[in-house]
Every structure is written in C-alpha cells, then in structure tokens.
Image (tube, rainbow, N blue to C red; front, side, top):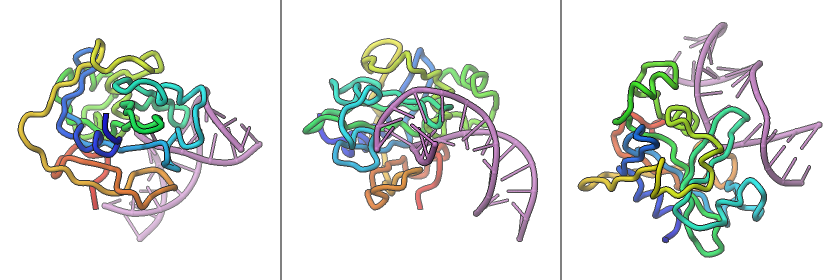
Length: 178
DNA sequence: CTTAGGATCGCCT
DNA sequence: GGCGATCCTAAGC
C-alpha cells in the first residue's frame, strides 16, 4: 500500500461500519515510522506490534486511560505506519450510537477519536483484526469529495506536518480546519 | 465562545 | 513515576 498520508486522504468519504454501526469518514490523521508523534517512532513494542504487521488491520490503543481509538494499519517502507480515524458522519445504527454515547447530539456522536470509539464500541478485543472482514465493513465513497488538510491535533511534536485530513464543509469534524 | 481541571491507566524511561 | 494521537463539565468573559 502507499504512504499513510495518501491513505488518510483517500479514506475521506469512505463508509466505515462496525457490526453495522457507523458512518462516513470525515476526518483522519496520518502517522508514520519516521514521525516523532507516532507510537511507532521508537520502534516495535508490545503495544504497537500490530502497526509493524500486515496492512489492512485495526490498531487500537487506549488513550488517557479512558478512550479506545481506532487506526488503520498501512504498509510503508519499514512498516509502522497508520491512519487514525478521527471522525464520522453518522449514517447507520444511530439509535445504537446514541445509547452507547449517552447523548443525542448527532454532531458529537462520532466527532473525535474517543467519541467515535465509544459510539462504535471499539475495544482492545478488535486490535489486529482484518478490516475487510466482520465485524468491520468498508464501502468506497461515491463520486468526488473535496479534502482539506492541516496540522494534527493533540500532539506536541511534528506540528508542522499537514497530516490531518477532513471533508471540506463537514459539520461532523472534531474541530474546524483553520 | 474560550479556558481550566479532573478522570484514569497502560506504556515506556 | 510521568505522561499521553481525549473528553466532559464548570466557570469565566
């Protein structure tokens, strides 16, 4: 597969479901092996092992001891590359997501990696699983989409890299693009 | 609308 | 032992 920034860009507009629940990907971030902000920057460890394995799998980690976050593993020279799925526009299983999240605001159902994880019931149990098999489902986007990019969010290193991607004009982004 | 603090725990130095 | 690829709530303008 190609580099993670290209994958991150091409994922915008793709429909992601987990057990039939989810929506259209509207925000992603790319991370790679040579990237100081990436979990893989310092080499393989127990946590990031999946990121050094085959492409097309889920890498899931626990953020701040509370939030399960979903990444797609990419293959790049040296491996250790992936894309963080940061936000969805909810389209399927909305009632289920509202119940899991405990709030009804559609704009905040899946707008952020932690919220998305909660809405889709992402847990460590899905770590390393193939994205082309149950419970995951990916459907190609229809037609063209306008993608914007900018600095990634919530990191302190490599903030100059424009490796955050979003669907232009979407109301479901975790934060606006400047 | 912006900012500040707390929650909470696995990972790595 | 310190610190996050975060989110929520409350308080301040």
